[in-house]
Image 1 (cartoon, rainbow, N blue to C red):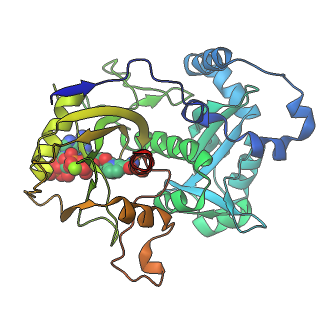
Image 2: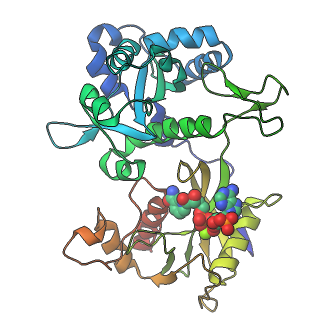
Image 3: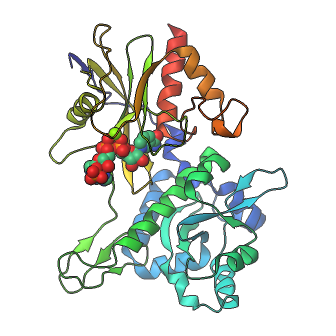
Length: 361
Ligand SMILES: NC(=O)C1=CN([C@@H]2O[C@H](COP(=O)(O)OP(=O)(O)OC[C@H]3O[C@@H](n4cnc5c(N)ncnc54)[C@H](OP(=O)(O)O)[C@@H]3O)[C@@H](O)[C@H]2O)C=CC1
Ligand SMILES: [Mg+2]
């Protein structure tokens, strides 16, 4: 890589920074005006300090749970509700609502304490997620007035601003469901009230929710961009190249290795663009970059079984794909029409950014 430009002073993306507070719209609906008047305008710092306190103080967190809001999941599928306009929203509940639902379904109300903290509103109303997978799904849907939808499908149904909170809630619930035992002693681990850590009382080991660092890079030769597909992708979908960071690697080294391994090309330059938490199949921190190769170095060579296909796409082809909002097999264009991941996915954002830059050239 002859040129390596890393942005040190990235502008703060308010969209990314404040997505945790996107439930305000729904909070307003549920709590009415008395709630809006509770505190006028708290700062970002005070919200972060408040969340820190809830993670450290079980009693304060329990109190916050009883005055907070809860997103519901069933076996990790979030509850969505169809509005009168046909759009989908995330319904939020309060502790008494959830206790009532559990009671009606014959379940112990203590299940409520398995809620995990995912954020708080501008006015310090704590937000939690809870998996009610122990109850019968259809009965819970009836009482909650919604449907539990697979998270991948929810990406297509929800507004982008609602997606970060719902993915964070799901990722934390998944982590708890898969870290019930200490890997050193085999004894059960115990969560704090916020769900920000689990402790093995036998060994004293503290476990924290983990994410794997993953690079994702949109490679360009100046005129075209390179997208690839795995055989497990939905038919017709192509995405940017991605790969897990190996132990000991820098982000730059992972980028260079993954592009070499997957398509046999040597990156010439890389520019960091953005990052994203990605919950599937388990939590990853996606580090999104643009990469270039020189014009004499564009011959794709697939190796191994990971990629089924990789191709260079023109700006026109990309523009057409970006217009296809839902999987092409549901449209007249037929099953093989090329499409890209949904707009919430960082792959889509890198592709859009590249297309925008090409138009300026
Ligand atoms: N948000 C977005 O826009 C996008 C997100 N992604 C996400 O990026 C992630 C990585 O993409 P992918 O290209 O598949 O990665 P890789 O190219 O690294 O290939 C995946 C393979 O790497 C191995 N591997 C190494 N480390 C890990 C680890 N920590 N966890 C799981 N597998 C590991 C596994 O092999 P083995 O099974 O043989 O052990 C796995 O099959 C995926 O989770 C994917 O969902 C990808 C593209 C777009
Ligand atoms: Mg890969």
